[in-house]
Length: 348
Image 1: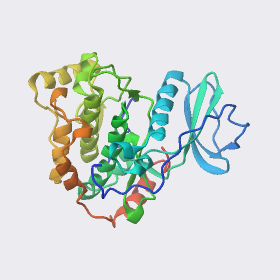
Image 2 (image 1 turned 120 degrees about the vertical axis):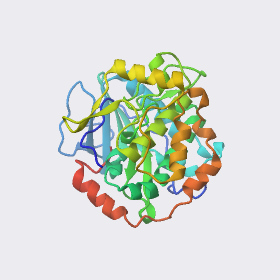
Image 3 (image 1 turned 45 degrees about the horizontal axis):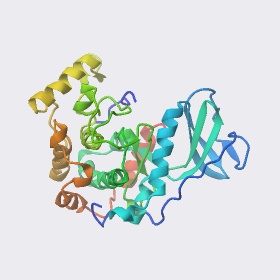
């Protein structure tokens, strides 16, 4: 089932395919968007003043993606995270040297005005996991999602090793590139304005998205951000398999659509599952991949102290997840459906 709504609100193994070259650290470029050291033109889109926005552009005569952020603090979170990601060496932590290919390459950083702070990314062709997953059959999900989530785990392991969390893991923030080798999906983790450096065992989150908040987020007190990330990844796998998040939404039979719980009901529900250490979300009945189901069960423990860190996930389970087909012959048909049923097929 492909839901007609977009959700609101805001290595493990050597066989994992990456790319062939690491990304360079982003360079700072001051000046306005339309002139300066670099030549930038907008691809048929206007520039709103005083608001955050994104646009497809050409940067030094190559396709690019522009993200301009009105909130300076959010821009600083994203910039600091990207600088750490591209400025470190994954091999120092026993990860493949091309792990940084799991993140979009940064082409430049610009300050348009005191109210606009912009990052220029390489333009990626593909779709986010919410749209991509919505065009797969249950059988295709069982076959293709292990590859996607292994790459996601590798990207998050790298971030955690260098002391950062993403902070807002959800299907919309996992981008599926269309140009993977042999038809295989290749991910890019995107949107880091909720990211932060972890300096204490417990600290406050920055933000998140309803449906993916960990139960402990509803206590409104500092918590383990790495274990919070484990929950969000588990909830993301759950959502991709079932087309709806584990908590926070109910099906309105009169409207024939899903609606979001009000904040008070959501708070009561999440505190309840922590107190009872028992899930109340529907079981996943659409998947027969025992390894994916086991991974969801590990990551979505009701209490944070029982949850594994992503960096400590059972290696034997990850090896089982990786033991899938090297090629996916149905990818071309899936991409045709994605292109026919979604508004765009580019980043993000």
